[in-house]
Length: 261
Length: 290
Ligand SMILES: Nc1ncnc2c1ncn2[C@@H]1O[C@H](COP(=O)(O)OP(=O)(O)OP(=O)(O)O)[C@@H](O)[C@H]1O
Ligand SMILES: [Mg+2]
Image (cartoon, rainbow over all chains, first blue to last red):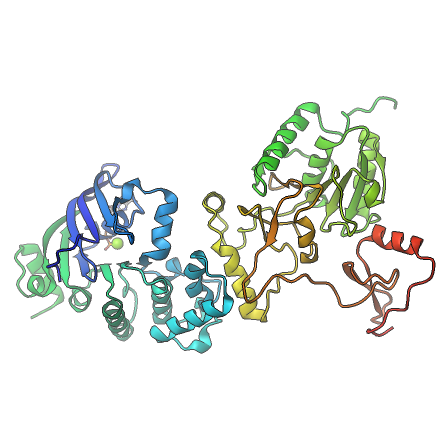
């Protein structure tokens, strides 16, 4: 998967973030290519969310850069993008799936409007076509079309998360950020969501950066894994290799405690 | 008392200059909401203090003022604002749209086409069209700055999804000169087309929210819509029972306590002028019960 002659889609170089004197993360560098899924794992407070926000240009790094290859093929430093360009990325080429669906959805408008919003933001002005596209996406995330005019308030936790995914994928982004996408859901609901995510990621050839503290999620979704501790990356590699044969004592501990052999 | 205890048109000259600067800026950036230091006026906010401050700042001794409330010159609100300026500025007043140089209005645009040299001053309760889905002021400002208006279409989408058509009938959002999305204040959408390419200057004052915005004469004002659900003007499908007009915006008036009702022009000046010039009584309106 990583063996590719093309340029990376996104490259982090020496990313460091301080919150005052508190370290968020330190000196993180890696690349991700189109169609590749990277999991970021680590215990609470290890800097996963900080890193994800840095990568998606929602937080400014104290040091380092993020470079992203735009749809026109030109690689740009995200720190130098204007606000309008950043927003454009967010409504076209990127998705961001929050752990708490309420943060990623508009809870007071219908599911159809939630899915259609990005289309409208991209200039769609034909109601019938927006609605038809929203219906197709509800199908894809296994939500009954009959619920298109209901607000997500009336949805279950799993449905909300699937709706959030549809809302993000409707513009067929190339890169999706996910922060604990299955967190807070029942185990059976988690399994179904993971299955769905895996299918979509493969079908659409998405690149994804998934933050999770659940190694089972990493195992199922990702090609590569990055293990963080105390704000730094301590081990990285192909997911199966790292999980089956962890090199670092901390990773061994992590694997042993969560995936008992 | 001979000399009034207040300045011409109530506000002191320094305040007027500040408000005029805001108005000039608003005219220079059509549809953009300009903040201004709104003053306390001797009337409650719901009475259009924003419009009153704008009117007070542009009024000169030779102006002729008309004040309407929902199209009518005779409501308490219209009468008291008219009296206020008669007393504080001594200006002439009129009920005739054609004769007025300044028209302060609450929620209507006169039926009579406005002319060059006239100024229409709107009283605005909530100036921010994005407020209903985005309560954060910092965020709505950024959306205006980036011309990021997908929320407006989101609202229209919801309208159609719920009602099968765009049901928004008041405060229907418009795009001004292809740039800023603006709330035309709670005027019926029937009036929206009158804002487009209008010969008069249109000024909007929101007192409580401290905003002034403007549409200069002959500016493009487009109502937002979808290709397959185009903007439609709406009026009751009836004639005015007093003057017979079939082209004016109608109010439904309750005539007795047994459920009797009739449709009459909301614009009282328009209705009276039609009745005054009619040499014969208009045909009895048809199509609805007497
Ligand atoms: N806004 C902030 N202000 C100050 N410190 C912060 C802030 N956000 C995060 N931190 C600190 O930075 C470090 C990394 O936090 P981060 O939220 O990135 O961890 P995480 O790996 O996402 O944890 P979790 O699994 O609990 O979500 C922690 O020590 C945290 O307390
Ligand atoms: Mg986190």
